[in-house]
Length: 281
Image 1 (cartoon, rainbow, N blue to C red):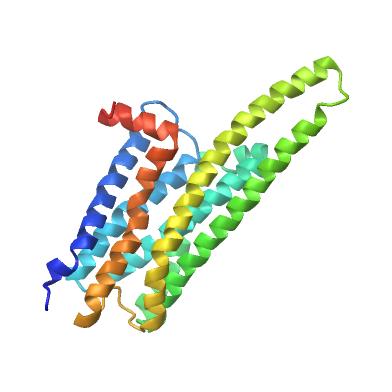
Image 2: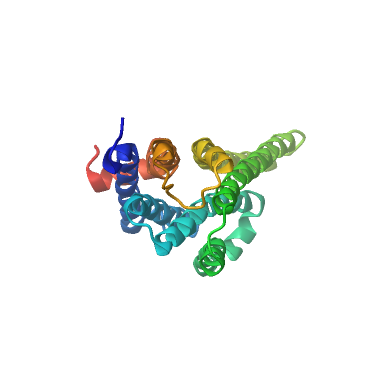
């Protein structure tokens, strides 16, 4: 049985459309910010991830019908940006936990913008190399493998951050015995504020690790397929492989579509912002 291109890529179209709409709504929420809770440098990487995840599904749908080097270039850059930004968010939360005071100096608005620009520069190195020296059979293997490595590193950074938070909590509990009442009261107040911050950080970090795990799970099938086949193009020309590739691409795009839903379900400030903006009361 033969299928038309439209029928083969229906799952991809559905997931990509959902991802574009969800990330667009999230980007609008971050920009309008009715609760004034996103006006900090830590929100910039989230916005950058949103831009990457909103545009990548569009160009993945476009590449099905248009075979052009420019479209391939943009897809590679957007994919690399999405993976690198997730890793950057994990590093940012680690710096907030380990060096909270230095983080305020290091990660000002301008420096965070420079960091994002540096990420985009790194993300275009491989696509530019492809544009100059031409396609190679291992290009897709390298790109997908880098994505997996970045997601694995994100999980490692999260584990290290979580361990640091646990050590801080233990140190605060060990300080209380043998102190004067005044010192104990001050330490209890500090410990209470620290627990609130730790709970908030753990909630956000667990959200990022969920996103990283989803990226790992959704990328693995495509990575395996790319390791088996040497096709360097984003979309294969082989009719027998197109149906399998369309399913794998749809699974991969779940990663880019799922992030706004995870933010909404896991983080209260995102949930409240969405309810105010879109009337989800």
